[in-house]
Every structure is written in C-alpha cells, then in structure tokens.
Length: 110
Image (cartoon, rainbow, N blue to C red; front, side, top):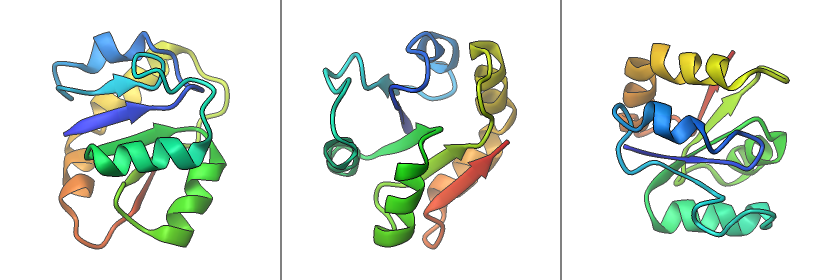
C-alpha cells in the first residue's frame, strides 16, 4: 500500500516507514507542495495513494466524497517526527485492514 504524506508532515518520515509502506511518497517529492487540497486528492485517487494528514480539510473532503482515495487523519497536534513514525508503525495492521475495507473511508489515529 502507498501512503501520500501531506505537507503538514515531515518528508523525513518516508525514509523511516518505507520498509512497511513501499512506494509511499511525500507531496514535496511529487512537486505537490503548496498545492490545493483538491489537486492532491485527485492525484492520490488517480495513483492509488492513501492520504495521511493532520489537515481537517481532507477529513471534510472524505466525509463529502467518500473514497477513493482513503484518508488517514492524524489527530495528534504538533508532534515530533518520531511520534508520527511510531503511530504509523504501531498501527500497521490496522492501516492495512483499513486499506482493504470496502466501506471505510477515514481512519483516525491519535
């Protein structure tokens, strides 16, 4: 499964999770930094990414449009990169199950 990390998350996270989530990317490496959320949404949809963000705008978009793409909402406030890596690592099984679900559009992690 491929995660697409939004600009509100550090691009350094990718190197720390790539073994668990191959082909994941950060919006920065895809030249999508400072891009409208709608464009990121469509990119994720067209390229089979799961969006990961702390941005409530993606949460609202998921509620409105459903999936694809799926959305992982990190409700953690300002947190160090190490905590975000830990959350994505500790919840690997949950995230894989979420990605496989036909009905779930949003996964909230704290």
